[in-house]
Image (tube, rainbow over the protein chains, first blue to last red):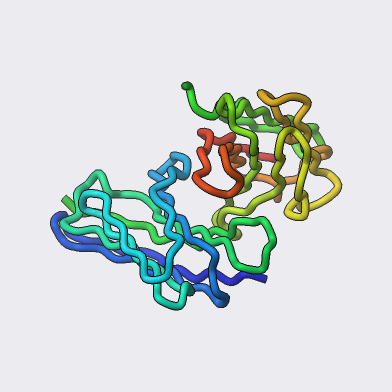
Length: 112
Length: 113
């Protein structure tokens, strides 16, 4: 089945520092989505990447899809306390099966 | 729109009891998903519906779990009988186009004693 690894599992940063989380798949992906879940909250859709090498930006967040469509990254510039939460990637592989596999998530703590 | 609505928000029950979780998707969304989240297994897709029809229930853990969608604005996930290992947060999500851009509800936190 689909294997989705996210690293790191946890990250503590000082407010103002940058943060990056990586998502790696064992298979070629059709697309990848990123979600954010605040503590005690529910996953909230951030973005979807479809094209090889695609880069999208949302204010301080930069999302990238690897050339081989097997990995992706989420980078946050100058973190703020509002960035606290767990960031999940979710992948749809190219087997044709309709499913969405969530990564294990990276829990970000921002120290004021 | 109010977003996806789930009830109850919290449920505490005893082993062996029946538990029913409810979900109202966003109006106009043709897809509805039920997920379970635990520390050990993360976020898992249990079942999803398209136009009220169950499409894939391969994620449903056991026969104790069942889900229905009698109409476009209501779905239930039932566990009968419940067991302590069913304790988790159960999320309902809906979308316009399949697995793209899913909108999650606030979740039901279930504790089975």
